[in-house]
Length: 250
Image (cartoon, rainbow, N blue to C red; front, top):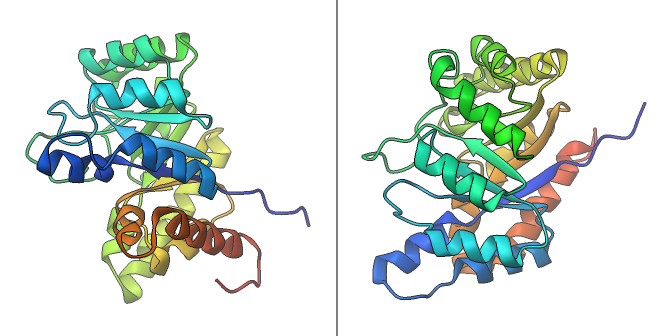
């Protein structure tokens, strides 16, 4: 049996900026958080530049692009403004997410199937610029097939519903994620997952063999208040690695 592939961890630093913006000024500094995440073993940094700039702001993206040694995953809505910003900076990856001004956080996946005509030229422009495009979608075969039709090489499966459930409903949602990840492999899509994951529920998702990367932010930044960001990330990394090896308890 081949050795299991190493699962990448992308650390989302948005909510360091949330704390900063609640008071104004420059502290805490999201770029410092990104450096500490790198030191703790993060394989990449994720930052979502929202239309209303409620957490990450344009200067943060400038600093991350200038100083990061690991790849930047630029989360963005499918708008002309965000496409232009992505093309100006050319991050390693751009993950297109749904965005509503009134939501507290991203709620559900992008309707890639229903927005084909809107998304197609945006995906093409990003890909032509050498940016790896991913779509943040539900674990729905129709959405996965739409990602292929759009020419997006990567999808990120929304795990928020799985994290909110428990018992049999959670097991059913996990099975849905597992089936979607297997379909990704058959369709030639690279499969990522994220949203809402914590120490208590990350293991079963990390164990899905087709999943190549997890993107985790809110929980890690919250846990960092108590133990520090490096300790929080190293523990998440440990649980993920243990889940990746069959028969190893987290």
